[in-house]
Length: 104
Image (cartoon, rainbow, N blue to C red; front, top):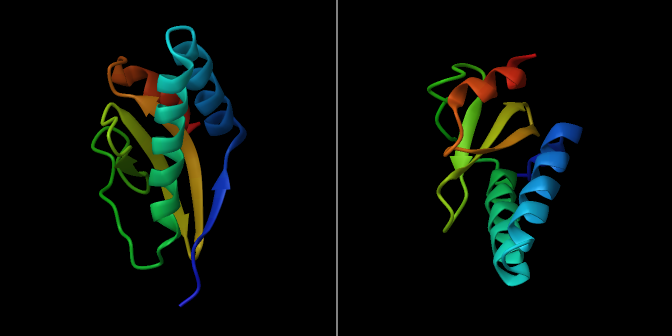
């Protein structure tokens, strides 16, 4: 079976860049480690047999997967056919009300 196709929203790309920029103020290596963990976790979504839970705050059709090693980062996505849209990289240490923007 063919792999899923990953599409990043502009917002998710910006969030990943902002996470990296913020963390590199303390440690470039640490920032790179977090970024790489997030990207490796997103790569898991290419597996056509993978299925992840609906986000408890956003509900259907929004699903999430947490970043390996850095569990505070939640990757919000939804899947249509073989297309997986990455909508947001959300730090769960933040107020969940900030997730409302994802639905818009």
